[in-house]
Amino acid sequence: MKITKRMSRQLVGVLAAVLALTLLPATPAAAAPGETVTAPLSELISDLPVEAEGPRAGYSREQFKHWIDADRDRCNTRAEVLLRDAATAPEITGRCTIVKDTGVWLSWYDDTTQTTKDDVDIDHMVPLGEAWDSGAAAWSAAERQAYANDLDDRRALLAVHDSANQSKADRDPAEWLPPATAATCRYVTDWVVVKTRWGLSADSGEHAAIQRYAAGCVDEEITVVLAR
Image (cartoon, one colour):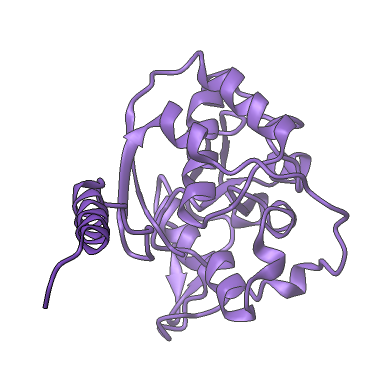
C-alpha cells in the first residue's frame, strides 16, 4: 500500500498523541476504606471538602443506631468505651454490667474526674447531627450505624463528663470548644481526623475556625485509617 503525505501526517499525529499519553503523570487512585492517610494536620485541614450545610431535614438520633454489641460479647459500645477509657477500671458483674460508683474517668474536655458511670457520657467527637449535615444524610443505615459505634479509632468515641458533652451538643468548633484551654489542639486534631476518616465535609465557618485554632498547634503528622 502506498503511503501518501496525508496518511503520513495522520500517522505522525497518532504517534504523537500516544506518546503524550504515555508521558502524562499517573493519576493517583481514589482513597478507599481501609487505606491509611498520613499527612501534617495543616494538610488534612486543607483537604477537607468545604461545603455549605443545608437545613437539617429528616435528622433524628434514631437514624444512627447505637449502642450495639458488634462483637456479640454482651458488652455494647457504651460499655466498651467506658471500660477502655477508665483511668481506674470499674467493677463488673455478669458479662458486662459496670457497677455504679466504681471506676474513675478523667474528662480532658473540662479537666475533671468522675467516679461514677452515671456522670460519664460517650461523646461522638463529630456529633451525629453534625455528621448528618456534613454528608451522612446520604449514607446507608449500615454506614450510619458503623459511624455511631466506631471503636476502630479511639478518637471517634470517648468517655467525657456528661455536663461537657451536653454543653457541646451538636455544635462544631466554630461554635464550641472544650472549656479546658489545654484541650484545644487535641480536640481540633481529633475533629479533623474523624471528618477525614469518614469523608465528611466542613462548612466555611467551621473550616475557618479549625484553621485558626490549628495555627497555634504543632503541625505534626497525623495518621488516619479511612472508614469510607
